[in-house]
Length: 244
Image 1 (tube, rainbow, N blue to C red):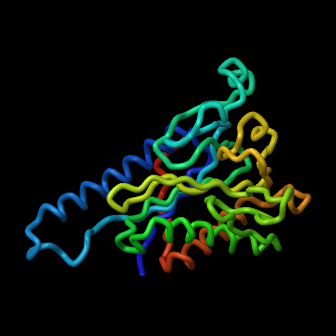
Image 2: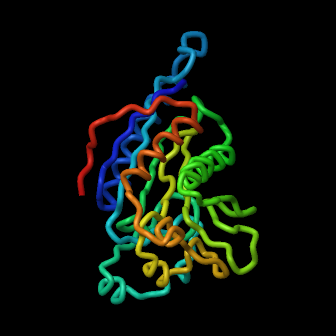
């Protein structure tokens, strides 16, 4: 069983969280590079990399992935300033999405060589964590064939809606970026983008589905537990290192 170091960073600016993730990824890549540079006969059984799971909440921000299309941002710079929303091009996969208050964002920095060297399987595992978490609230989450993330009524024409977006980067099997689960999110901010580049489906939140605001700390606790279960890992606390 692997150990994953857990931090809840609270509300933090997107670029600060991104830089911190990048530093953790690069530290693991250095460890792996040193391991591969050793003569094969003298290498330890495996690399001594460190796994992390970061939870946070961002200030209002739109982010677009490497394969994203700028036409899916429906407002200009002046309107972004009026809305007090930042914008970042990122090195994750996927198109455009929104992060903001009331949304739980999870960033796993894992060395998949200690879990499963299959990026598709990794994404399905992330989705499984969310599906199991939603089940605690009586919400039936599922997958939409051909798309990442977690959906409700995925295959019901006219009713499919996304509750959790996902996008990751993986370098030498070390991951960063992750998922964004809409808990008590102000969904109006999705009106200014084409979320994930999908034009014919809507976005929802736990609050919208249940009709009342939910305890975000409770959601985080469930997510953490389910993450440990799905990834067969012990998740232990580590003091937060990043602030807004």
